[in-house]
Image (cartoon, rainbow, N blue to C red; front, side, top):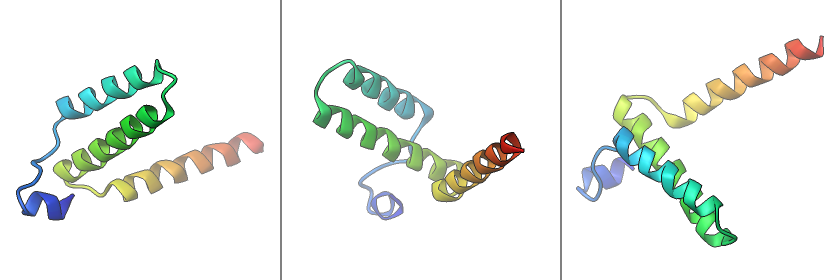
Length: 79
């Protein structure tokens, strides 16, 4: 997304664009069309990654942080 933004292909992602992607994904879930669902899911992920860039942090690092928090919660529940 950084390269596309530099080239002027896309602009910064906004919360409204993420909301639109969520709505499109919800709509796709109400169909039996797996390709449409997959495309909408990919668009949602792309939007979420883009808004993290706009906010100034790395989406992968944020996901790793959430994963680590989840793992710690599971470990605590197993005690």
